[in-house]
Image (cartoon, rainbow over all chains, first blue to last red; front, side):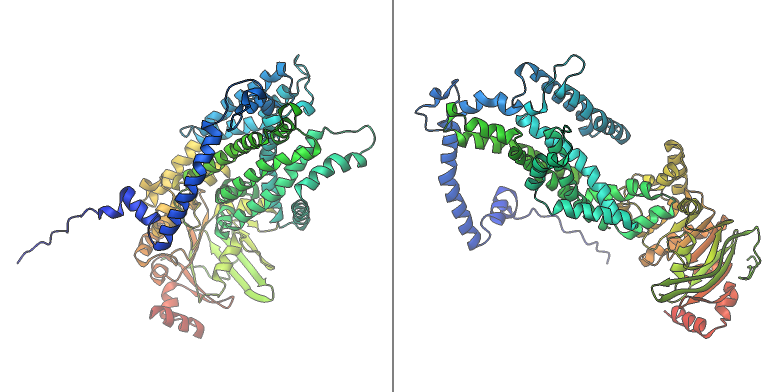
Length: 369
Length: 257
């Protein structure tokens, strides 16, 4: 008897396991303990969020030009931030010259934007990226510093605020990553001299706190230099931050290199690729992709560590805010100042974090080995 | 089948690979003991032996993936030395297929194949990609060109690995247990590819336990045990009339499994 067995029709899943209801059951009310935690969290949010919102938004003072406007208000005095915003952004950079900073920023955005367009072919991106890496620092330096092409000179000691934070973070990141890669490769080198050199470098810089590095660069270094030779204070901080972070970066990258199977090195070698080509084309693309979370972690740490330059008297965002808070004319608004600074740092760090997650997803090629 | 050359063939213009008195130690462990082997152009050799007998190590010495401490190896008239440039030159002409494929997981199949022609042979990209497609067709997977290795089956990956080697237009191909990591149903597709390659006259040295492959394709079968070449003969004689006891034991073990 020919009886064909019909496949069982698909049934919809029970309504309580899908959609918002299912999500809540799974994540909020899955056990008595979780129900208790959910209740506790709801209670904590209930008592804190309204207070915060009232302070930051509903009771806050937004308009006015001086501290009188904030008299009697029970919320935040955002007037303090508004009045000082230019200072927070540019520090003591002369007002008449600030357009140069804006142009440099605009150039960076225009130059870097194509790198984030997904349909752009990779060889074009590589060329553009390298070009940007080589030429942008020169252009930006000329614009910031001046003294050339009829631009009045602006001493680096006048650079400040978010501008200075971004300069230190930007230089630190773009210089620390390649340096870290070289150090990581050197540490795994077969040549004992190079290996020893790299290990010594990494272990030295990792063993010293960044504060010490900055102090040494600004206080001790001049003592050892002959009379009359004086490096720019910002330059010394930049070098210190870069070398310090490069050591951390090297260890992150080394972790990635160690995760690459030996077979990859052998396959590259068997095809006749030399050391540098094998590294650049086969090993590093895989190793760096593996350690994107670690690299971004180091970048985020670096971004926040730039605030330490305040101890050597550079006016980065943190120090500028601090300076405004201690200004006698505006005493009493330290909360607003610190909240603002925290918000700016958070915005940058969170963006980096999100971008790295996006990058990881995009670069995933479904391999498991 | 062509008459095989013996291991003691005189150095001739025709030989592709000569290994003379090659010894290798891992620390105190003597892995290769006085390996002498001459491979003629167009000759196909199967190396077999129990695991740990040094057969993989021996062929990996030919493209210098392993160093050896004594003896000499001449590949296509060039003697291996410590000169990095020379080693790279020799590797260009010696294709290698690994047990675990070792495809580059971050590159597509096409990029895997075109990479070495572009960066080592300086072939223009477009031409290299055409070359890659040509060899992918030859191993019968042109439709997978845009995929990543992780999306392919083991057999397909190994065929890509063969195509990747062929793209360098090698004079000799080394196969290091190419089917040992494959599921049984995929072994045949890889062996078929290798047989087709053999029919085209490629010089091949193949470490494998696929005795059927050895019987149909090899000119000469070499049996190694504990770092030594114990016996070598034509497949007919090797399988029907093994000379040494160790060979007989090995054959009885693998043929009865």
